[in-house]
Amino acid sequence: MPIAAYALHARGLLRERADRAHRMLACCTLCPRRCRVDRLAGETGRCRTGALARIASYGPHFGEEAPLVGVGGSGTVFLAGCNLCCCFCQNYDISQGSDSGQEVDARGFASVMLELQAMGCHNINLVTPSHVVPQILAALIPALDAGLDIPVVFNCSGYESAETLALLAGAVDIYMPDVKFWRPETANRYAEAPDYPERVREALAIMHRQVGDLDIGPDGIARAGLLVRHLLMPGLLAETEAILGFIATTLSPATYVNLMAQYHPCGRAGQHEELRRTVTGEAYRRALDTARTLGLTRLDRPDLARLLRRLGL
Ligand code: SF4
Ligand code: SF4
Image (cartoon, rainbow, N blue to C red; front, side):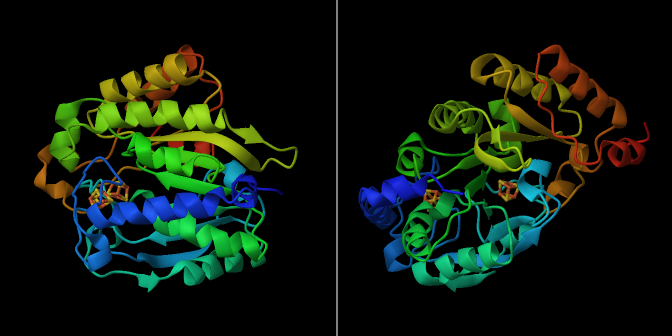
């Protein structure tokens, strides 16, 4: 299946984008943190990542959304480091631990993509990619030259800068942001990012303009488009409802949405009394009702029966 980046590469624009992105590393403003560190000289900012991307693990993943998994699985690449740094991160050691993962250059990164394709994966699912956009663009060049032809998924937190998203236009097939917080106070409390709500709303609009609603082929596999995730948090149902309202009215009621209820305390969540519990089944049911009332009908249902049992419904 052809992927978007081919057209960009054929016009010589992928190399140009990769070079522009690479230059940004010298005074890094890739994401809204705008740390202005020289990553090319080995300095690191909030994402704790220098000039090279680090891959913590990779392989076919069967726990992602149904349109990504199919029979061959989603070719997941877990990238070490993160620009958002949520206190409750389920992959805390990878996102915020020091020196986790194996450094890869563009060719090494491309080899991983090609290996996942050879394993039969339906896509390359880049998990936590926002701080390594230059490295991703650079890796796509040798990967495409060697025959990569499955969609590229940008599986991110949504804490993105408009300038960096512009570099990704036409290089990414599927955007999969996990929209986390609605209120600046919440984003500040749990991720020290009070501008997150503003940035993620802007990012969602840009992503939607670039790729549109999720397009799923006759084989049930996603080809391109926007897939929005949202993890319900304990006590934050009102924020969930506001986020769903934004998606339905400002983006599109045809947005494919995965409402996730698997929150459990991880990382530094224990520092906040209110985060030391899971979400209730009642909150999840109300969130689903809200989504339906808003006209959001494309809701991911990976294993709804099991989930409702776990939540005691
Ligand atoms: S990508 Fe990393 S170093 Fe660059 S601005 Fe974001 S957090 Fe800071
Ligand atoms: S939950 Fe996602 S965005 Fe938050 S720290 Fe973990 S990897 Fe980063």
